[in-house]
Amino acid sequence: MHVNFLEIVAAFMVLFAIIDIPGSIPIILDIKSRTGDIEPLKATLAASFIFFAFLFIGSPLLGVFGIDVSSFAIAGSFIIFLIGMEMVLGIEIFRYYSKGGGSIVPIAFPLIAGAGSITTILSIKAEYQTINIFIALVLNMIIVYLVLRLTSKFEKILGPSGLLILKKFFGVILLAIAVRLFLTNTGIVLPNAR
View 1 (cartoon, helix red, strand yellow):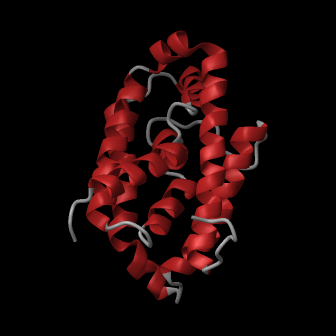
View 2 (cartoon, rainbow, N blue to C red; view 1 turned 135 degrees about the vertical axis):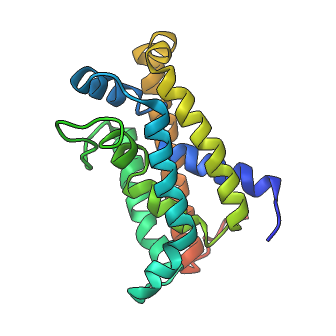
View 3 (cartoon, rainbow, N blue to C red; view 1 turned 90 degrees about the horizontal axis):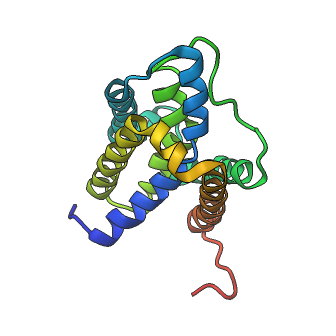
Protein backbone atom coordinates (compact mmCIF):
# COMPACT_ATOMS: atom_id res chain seq x y z
CA MET A 1 0.00 0.00 0.00
CA HIS A 2 1.64 3.22 -1.15
CA VAL A 3 0.57 6.78 -1.95
CA ASN A 4 0.22 7.33 -5.68
CA PHE A 5 -0.48 10.89 -6.86
CA LEU A 6 -2.15 9.77 -10.11
CA GLU A 7 -4.45 7.38 -8.25
CA ILE A 8 -5.37 10.14 -5.78
CA VAL A 9 -6.22 12.53 -8.63
CA ALA A 10 -8.22 9.85 -10.48
CA ALA A 11 -10.12 8.77 -7.34
CA PHE A 12 -10.67 12.42 -6.41
CA MET A 13 -12.20 13.18 -9.81
CA VAL A 14 -14.45 10.10 -9.72
CA LEU A 15 -15.68 10.93 -6.21
CA PHE A 16 -16.02 14.64 -6.98
CA ALA A 17 -18.19 13.80 -9.99
CA ILE A 18 -20.39 11.30 -8.15
CA ILE A 19 -20.80 13.36 -4.97
CA ASP A 20 -21.50 16.31 -7.28
CA ILE A 21 -21.62 18.90 -4.52
CA PRO A 22 -21.64 21.85 -6.98
CA GLY A 23 -24.57 20.26 -8.83
CA SER A 24 -26.34 19.77 -5.50
CA ILE A 25 -26.29 23.49 -4.66
CA PRO A 26 -29.84 24.08 -5.99
CA ILE A 27 -31.13 21.09 -3.96
CA ILE A 28 -29.25 22.27 -0.85
CA LEU A 29 -30.74 25.75 -1.23
CA ASP A 30 -34.22 24.25 -1.54
CA ILE A 31 -33.70 22.12 1.59
CA LYS A 32 -32.28 25.14 3.43
CA SER A 33 -35.39 27.17 2.59
CA ARG A 34 -37.61 24.37 3.96
CA THR A 35 -35.64 23.31 7.05
CA GLY A 36 -33.81 26.47 8.09
CA ASP A 37 -30.07 26.73 8.57
CA ILE A 38 -27.79 23.85 7.60
CA GLU A 39 -24.83 22.99 9.84
CA PRO A 40 -21.93 22.45 7.39
CA LEU A 41 -19.56 20.78 9.88
CA LYS A 42 -22.21 18.39 11.20
CA ALA A 43 -23.30 17.38 7.69
CA THR A 44 -19.69 16.93 6.50
CA LEU A 45 -18.68 14.80 9.51
CA ALA A 46 -21.75 12.59 9.17
CA ALA A 47 -21.13 12.03 5.45
CA SER A 48 -17.42 11.37 6.11
CA PHE A 49 -18.27 8.76 8.73
CA ILE A 50 -20.53 6.92 6.26
CA PHE A 51 -17.89 7.06 3.51
CA PHE A 52 -15.01 5.88 5.72
CA ALA A 53 -17.13 3.06 7.17
CA PHE A 54 -17.83 1.74 3.68
CA LEU A 55 -14.24 2.30 2.57
CA PHE A 56 -12.79 0.19 5.40
CA ILE A 57 -15.48 -2.41 6.17
CA GLY A 58 -17.52 -2.41 2.96
CA SER A 59 -15.78 -5.45 1.45
CA PRO A 60 -16.11 -7.68 4.56
CA LEU A 61 -19.75 -6.62 4.76
CA LEU A 62 -20.25 -7.70 1.15
CA GLY A 63 -18.51 -10.99 1.98
CA VAL A 64 -21.26 -11.74 4.48
CA PHE A 65 -23.70 -11.71 1.55
CA GLY A 66 -21.30 -13.67 -0.70
CA ILE A 67 -20.70 -10.75 -3.08
CA ASP A 68 -17.24 -9.86 -4.40
CA VAL A 69 -16.09 -6.29 -5.14
CA SER A 70 -16.09 -6.85 -8.93
CA SER A 71 -19.74 -7.93 -8.92
CA PHE A 72 -20.61 -4.95 -6.75
CA ALA A 73 -18.63 -2.70 -9.12
CA ILE A 74 -20.67 -3.94 -12.09
CA ALA A 75 -23.91 -3.30 -10.20
CA GLY A 76 -22.50 0.07 -9.18
CA SER A 77 -21.72 0.95 -12.79
CA PHE A 78 -25.46 0.71 -13.56
CA ILE A 79 -26.30 3.08 -10.69
CA ILE A 80 -23.58 5.53 -11.75
CA PHE A 81 -24.85 5.33 -15.33
CA LEU A 82 -28.40 6.18 -14.22
CA ILE A 83 -27.18 9.10 -12.10
CA GLY A 84 -25.22 10.39 -15.11
CA MET A 85 -28.32 10.06 -17.32
CA GLU A 86 -30.32 11.91 -14.68
CA MET A 87 -27.82 14.79 -14.70
CA VAL A 88 -27.46 14.99 -18.49
CA LEU A 89 -31.16 14.66 -19.34
CA GLY A 90 -32.47 16.69 -16.39
CA ILE A 91 -34.83 13.93 -15.24
CA GLU A 92 -35.41 12.57 -11.73
CA ILE A 93 -34.81 8.85 -11.33
CA PHE A 94 -33.73 8.86 -7.67
CA ARG A 95 -35.38 10.80 -4.88
CA TYR A 96 -32.75 12.85 -3.07
CA TYR A 97 -34.62 14.18 -0.07
CA SER A 98 -37.81 13.98 1.93
CA LYS A 99 -39.76 16.49 3.98
CA GLY A 100 -38.59 17.41 7.46
CA GLY A 101 -34.87 16.85 6.85
CA GLY A 102 -31.88 18.77 8.10
CA SER A 103 -28.11 18.63 8.25
CA ILE A 104 -27.88 14.85 8.73
CA VAL A 105 -30.95 13.76 6.77
CA PRO A 106 -31.20 14.59 3.88
CA ILE A 107 -27.98 16.61 3.40
CA ALA A 108 -25.34 14.18 4.77
CA PHE A 109 -27.41 11.14 3.80
CA PRO A 110 -28.58 10.56 1.11
CA LEU A 111 -27.61 13.76 -0.75
CA ILE A 112 -23.82 13.66 -0.13
CA ALA A 113 -23.29 10.05 0.98
CA GLY A 114 -25.97 8.45 -1.15
CA ALA A 115 -26.30 5.08 -2.86
CA GLY A 116 -24.30 6.21 -5.88
CA SER A 117 -21.33 7.57 -3.93
CA ILE A 118 -21.21 4.61 -1.53
CA THR A 119 -21.35 2.22 -4.49
CA THR A 120 -18.59 4.19 -6.18
CA ILE A 121 -16.29 3.88 -3.16
CA LEU A 122 -16.71 0.11 -3.12
CA SER A 123 -16.39 -0.04 -6.91
CA ILE A 124 -13.16 1.96 -7.20
CA LYS A 125 -11.54 -0.21 -4.52
CA ALA A 126 -11.19 -2.71 -7.35
CA GLU A 127 -8.96 -0.20 -9.20
CA TYR A 128 -7.23 2.03 -6.62
CA GLN A 129 -5.44 1.42 -3.33
CA THR A 130 -7.33 2.24 -0.12
CA ILE A 131 -4.86 4.90 1.05
CA ASN A 132 -5.27 6.83 -2.19
CA ILE A 133 -9.07 6.63 -2.00
CA PHE A 134 -8.88 7.78 1.64
CA ILE A 135 -6.84 10.87 0.70
CA ALA A 136 -9.20 11.60 -2.23
CA LEU A 137 -12.18 11.29 0.14
CA VAL A 138 -10.63 13.69 2.68
CA LEU A 139 -10.00 16.25 -0.09
CA ASN A 140 -13.58 15.86 -1.31
CA MET A 141 -14.97 16.29 2.20
CA ILE A 142 -13.02 19.55 2.55
CA ILE A 143 -14.66 20.76 -0.66
CA VAL A 144 -18.08 19.57 0.56
CA TYR A 145 -17.62 21.55 3.79
CA LEU A 146 -16.56 24.70 1.91
CA VAL A 147 -19.45 24.44 -0.54
CA LEU A 148 -21.96 23.94 2.29
CA ARG A 149 -20.52 27.03 4.00
CA LEU A 150 -20.66 29.12 0.82
CA THR A 151 -23.75 27.72 -0.93
CA SER A 152 -25.55 31.05 -1.34
CA LYS A 153 -22.40 32.76 -2.64
CA PHE A 154 -21.84 30.00 -5.20
CA GLU A 155 -25.38 30.46 -6.45
CA LYS A 156 -24.76 34.17 -7.01
CA ILE A 157 -21.37 33.60 -8.70
CA LEU A 158 -22.38 30.74 -11.03
CA GLY A 159 -25.95 31.72 -11.71
CA PRO A 160 -28.54 29.28 -13.04
CA SER A 161 -26.68 28.78 -16.35
CA GLY A 162 -23.35 28.03 -14.64
CA LEU A 163 -24.96 25.48 -12.31
CA LEU A 164 -26.68 23.80 -15.26
CA ILE A 165 -23.43 23.60 -17.25
CA LEU A 166 -21.62 22.04 -14.25
CA LYS A 167 -24.36 19.49 -13.80
CA LYS A 168 -24.35 18.46 -17.48
CA PHE A 169 -20.53 18.33 -17.63
CA PHE A 170 -20.24 16.06 -14.59
CA GLY A 171 -23.13 13.96 -15.90
CA VAL A 172 -21.15 13.12 -19.05
CA ILE A 173 -18.08 12.30 -16.92
CA LEU A 174 -20.21 9.93 -14.82
CA LEU A 175 -21.49 8.16 -17.94
CA ALA A 176 -17.90 7.58 -19.10
CA ILE A 177 -16.90 6.37 -15.61
CA ALA A 178 -19.83 3.94 -15.57
CA VAL A 179 -18.84 2.47 -18.93
CA ARG A 180 -15.21 2.10 -17.84
CA LEU A 181 -16.18 0.44 -14.53
CA PHE A 182 -18.43 -1.99 -16.37
CA LEU A 183 -15.79 -2.88 -18.97
CA THR A 184 -12.97 -3.20 -16.42
CA ASN A 185 -14.92 -5.54 -14.15
CA THR A 186 -16.43 -7.70 -16.89
CA GLY A 187 -13.18 -8.07 -18.82
CA ILE A 188 -14.74 -6.81 -22.06
CA VAL A 189 -12.21 -5.04 -24.29
CA LEU A 190 -13.41 -2.58 -26.89
CA PRO A 191 -11.80 -3.02 -30.35
CA ASN A 192 -10.39 0.53 -30.47
CA ALA A 193 -9.49 0.81 -26.75
CA ARG A 194 -5.94 2.02 -26.05
